[in-house]
Image (cartoon, rainbow, N blue to C red; front, top):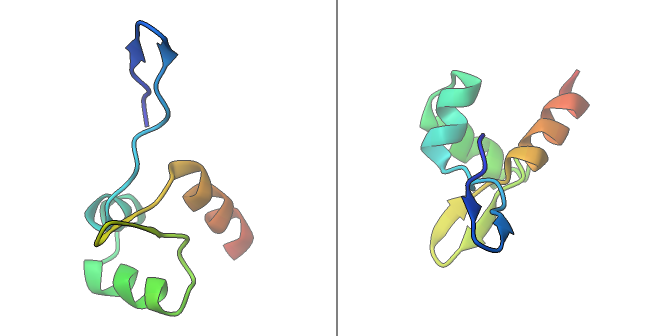
Amino acid sequence: METESNQRGTMPPKLMTVEDVADYLAKPRSWVYGNWQREQIPFRKVGQALRCRPADLEKWLDRQS
């Protein structure tokens, strides 16, 4: 994930949606939702939406091996 620059410095990495995570992992959205419900994938609720920080997803992937 790329970061964008602004006048104050570097923006934090973009948060990933369920669809972004599904595409990245090459898994269906239902699989991603199922793993979130079992507290496997590190999503956070932002309002009613689920979002995942790319760094958290990478850490989770490292622990899966």
